[in-house]
Image 1 (cartoon, rainbow, N blue to C red):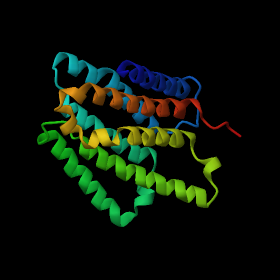
Image 2: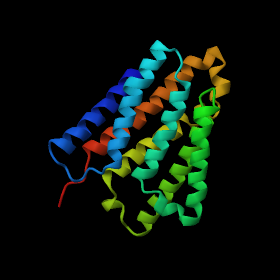
Image 3: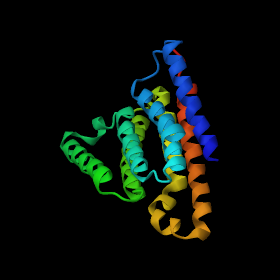
Image 4: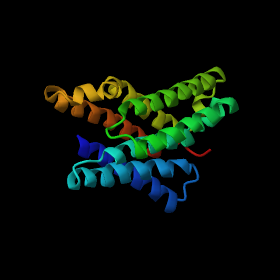
Length: 204
């Protein structure tokens, strides 16, 4: 299952750069270059290598989760929804979290990841509501729509597991089931990435 979603991340990565460099597709937005590249490099190469060679990728896992949330923030232009008075608070929290991950955290911080994703999804749902109110759903950017859908499916399928990570992972009876279900969530997420680069809106 892990191999499957890593392959899907890789296909999304290659498809994006092929369309960008060879086809010169102007529909592709630059933040998504960071999204596909980071997902493929970390999931397909860095985390896999560290788990095999060093048997521990805790710091890199936490850093990867933090980086992906920051990239989602860019991809969805969420600063436009948060409002200027909230931006300083959000950015300050991001900075403190970054320092905590690098210098203090000793185990996978799944609850921080859940908290970050919750904020991203709430803002994304506000954006969805706005587009629904103004009847703009048909014009919604396809990359944003499908990546957002992938994140939502990942969140729904993995939320209880991520929240109770430390409790579940310590119980060997449920460890394998936990890992399998989390991988299913990653398949949903990777499919959202792939759809976002394959199902672009036709140019008028």
